[in-house]
Amino acid sequence: MSTPDRFMRGSSLCASMHGPRGGARQVHARGPRPARLVAVAVCIAAGAASAQQRQASPEAADAAAPSVLTAPGESPQLGEPATPEQIAGWDIGIGPDGENLPEGSGTPSQGAEVYATKCIACHGEDGAGGPNDVLAGGHGTLTDAAPVRTIGSYWPYATTLFDYVRRAMPYTQPQSLTNDEAYALTAYLLELNGVIDRNDVMNADTLPRVAMPNRDGFMWAWPDWKQ
Ligand code: HEC
Image (cartoon, rainbow, N blue to C red; front, side, top):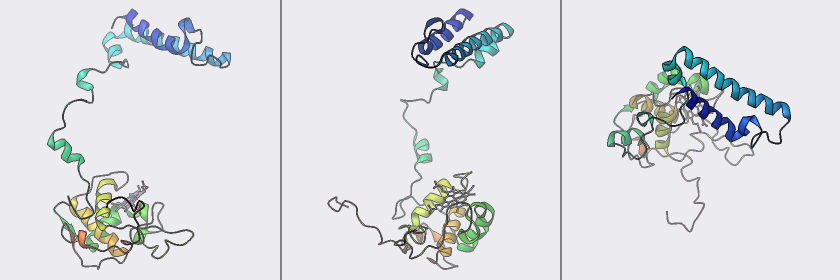
């Protein structure tokens, strides 16, 4: 883009909001005068800086210039069909009946080890007392004035726990866990909540069969709808 073009583009971008030659149009039209002056000064300064940069290095100026139109190669490729591999990468949802659960397995004691390194800082020892969500306890509190909703007291499906942990945790590194780690952590959190025993193995076969304490604590909000 030539220098005059660049100025034209700069001036049309600024002028569309501030009016030709800086006379206020839409933005700040009713604002105090100093605000108008500052806005105009910023526009002029941006144009001047861009011209200086172009003189020093035209290539670098072009590379640094924010483009209004995105080059085809940099677009999000809208309109192109997603490949099966791309879809599989997103399609990681687990159904309540265990549909889509992957290979792998884990026990509560294996999960305790992973928890101690990847989860404890935010969720506390034994799933409570950390800065973030309480993961265990709260049983029988749902009708209290301040219910403590946890995996054990509230969640209706054990499979959701695997889905959530694998998808979203650790909070700062989502989807970094292996399937075995996600099964083991699921097992550990279920054991902490007294739902399974220390030596129970969680996998695609056993996890959907875990009966959650609050499974029947939900009611259909629209009874007329077919379930
Ligand atoms: C950096 C802090 C951090 C770490 C580390 C972390 N979490 Fe979390 N966790 C959070 C936050 C914040 C939330 C609430 C997220 C929200 O509500 O969107 C959460 C929510 C959860 C929940 C849902 C609780 C509920 O009842 O809604 C589970 C289960 C969970 N984390 C498990 C884990 C596991 C397992 C690990 C270790 C692999 C882990 N988290 C590591 C911060 C963390």
